[in-house]
Length: 344
Image (cartoon, rainbow, N blue to C red; front, side, top):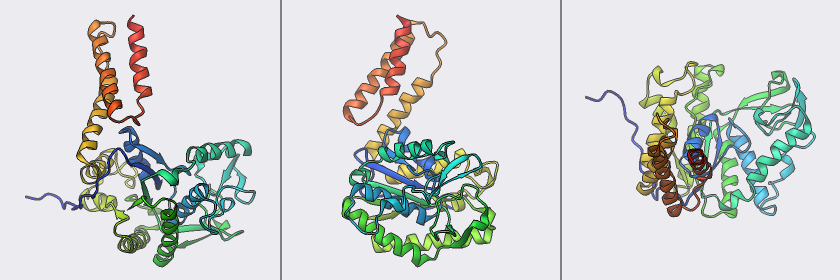
């Protein structure tokens, strides 16, 4: 007896492995998956502009990173159109904000805001030249245009709504933008592959019908892009997994909109089994085992048995580090060595 409708997902070929590196941008759902990839020791940069909701803001941010990689690639890639200049930075409710960045970057002084932005951009230096996967999650087709400039903003930062024009993007508008963008991305980095998803988080402020229309626009645009570039653009059905397979409110958080921790974990498991190769899956389990061992609270932390236990963790870390030299285990190793020093 089938108790739910299972979403069939074709296995990714070639599958993702630890030689791959990731740039992940979009809604807060991509943050959840990005954190799991990071915890599994994949080389991953998640939302360097903060959470982005609409595909145009994602595209604008990618263009800024592209411009950082190659200032000669296209006349359309103008850095100062994305990174804050005087028209993009403003003071509101006690903080300085940027229309191009999420509120996580906002600060009490203009200088601190620019420092926050600069640190994130420095961490992304040349990322577009080297990354092998770009994961993009679109949350909504609705955008806000700043009336003074007509430009789409990434975040309104709680400014009065009458200062913006709100509209829904058209399918062709998204497709045309991304066809140009992807061409520029592949000119800089021919090996780059793109994974597109639609966020399963519903934007109920718009109303459920309007939310469905918005998500439909995103789905149609993604489908056209995938058909246009079948060997380079892929789709992962996170939206379908939550709304069709996990069709129950127990898979949602208390707000009944965001997925629960259990739901995100299930989507992650389906991603691992369909998109990551077997050797990398085994490594993920080894990393998880090390974390579990570190989280263990001994009954007798001063005992020789616990010292041997810590040495086992160090040995596991060193074994994995030899196989995957780009794994970053410095923090975990330092924890073990600190605990060992306390025993001597």
